[in-house]
Length: 314
Image 1 (cartoon, rainbow, N blue to C red):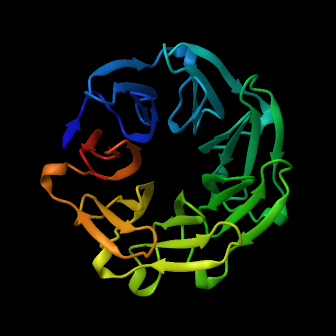
Image 2: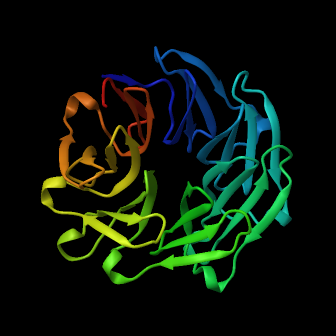
């Protein structure tokens, strides 16, 4: 285990590209690049030309890294090998409104626009040119603050801050379904992750005995409920990040007034608890983003402004 603390300032997102780990610093309006194998600092990217404004999400497409600027109404594209600026994508046509999540597939980049939880939309871009493909919006989609995205084949899943998951066809933008019935317990879905044919949804809050949060597992091909993972033994406390590797699901618990954060490891095939990872040695403090690289798990601590690396997590 190792904890890195090199000038991070509310790290909100992580992305791995080969041997490099990119960290989006929300409050610092910068991107930090580390050598993932050693933890050594490669560079801090923060020049005015990048127009970073509260960078909230990262996505990789080929040799480029895309950065969503939540309060800058823009997306910055840079080269992963040098950190050089490619372009800043902005303008009224894109209808960026608090972009908070990104997902890339082939020539397309999808951008979730939170819009203060009031409606919202998804903007689709051409990754090679930055040109607008379409803006997906309208009452049928039941967007209620899109804040997390996940791709599965030709389907794009959108987690809505105020409840429910919307599924779209990536080739046309057409609505496939809205998943929102009470049995799914999709309360404030904060993160999405895919494992095989299943989609996992981290619900940062719940109701009744599950007020500290749950994880909902869906069949990605049908939208059917597989199970809701909940109960005291999982020690969920505001689950806000997910990562899947080698059959296990890792859940980042943002924490609360009594616990600064933890990780819950779950068997992705059964929902059974594997372990809860916590303790002062990990220096967890609001673990709000996760990234897996080979056998190692990287954890962004939003409130501690650090990154924890767990060796041999898988």
